[in-house]
Image (cartoon, rainbow, N blue to C red; front, side):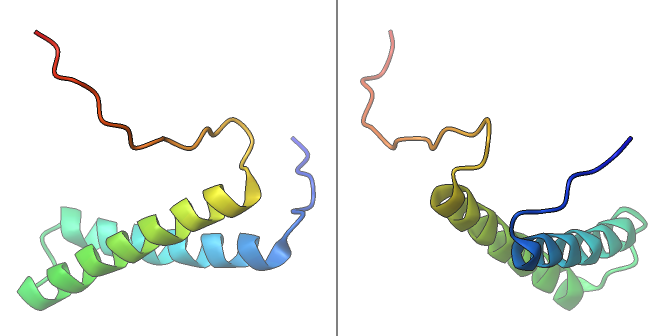
Length: 77
């Protein structure tokens, strides 16, 4: 399998670094190796990663992604 070069190497590096850090924390969390402080820091990092991904998706029109519109929908009965 061949991989195309990223159009934005800076974004690629940032996403890869965030994914690697997240994988490390996730592995420790699954093994119950995090104390309460580290668990809170991990959750904070997850939240920050989500914000970064949303920003990238909004700014760069990621293929196959449609931004969700926050609309008021009446409750279904």
